[in-house]
Image 1 (cartoon, rainbow, N blue to C red):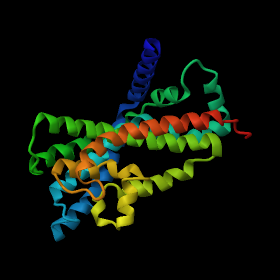
Image 2: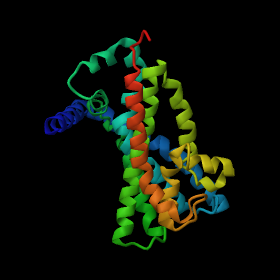
Image 3: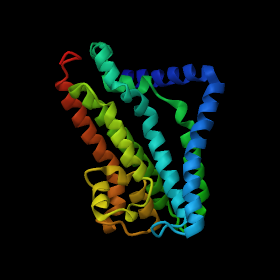
Length: 266
């Protein structure tokens, strides 16, 4: 176990050192990513500047929601998205077969060897929005609330990593999975807004079969003391449990697909 952990940390350090060889392009990528997201957030600010509220949420509350959503996504995606988005190509080229004969877990090797520091722009923007919004959100702070905030962010990162893992695992059985990421991002974009602005059926979907409501809306609403449809007083517990539950589902599904993997030839 210790040797495996040391190997994974070595792979992360190696990946970071390799990427830092091109620092100028990395910094430009961070700025471009942050600018792209900031332009979207600016459009939300313009709407709120005109109408004051969006589904009952003020701009500081929306800024906290957007920052939480961006930061939670980035923390999970830096380990999984770019790596597992390539699963379809890895299967078709036979590279994944080569991973199976190595004395290391193929999922762990993929995610740690491909650790992506290009999400620095996401992290800086998300963290900056949270730091700006928190003093204006009217939250009564205490140690349990701080721990709730940190644990909710960790849970959001777990949800991202789990959903991406499930989508990537589909390539092991179906041979294709890239198109599923388009569907994922359609719902992902919806999850950056308060679920209360959507139809009741979509609200229910975002806290049940599509757990992306726990990426930001449920934990932030719980921190702000806002009512959460269908969860009520259980919103805090649900926001903390969603990530670990998604991890268990992802592990089970990955193993299920791996057992049925027969190579690119099917």
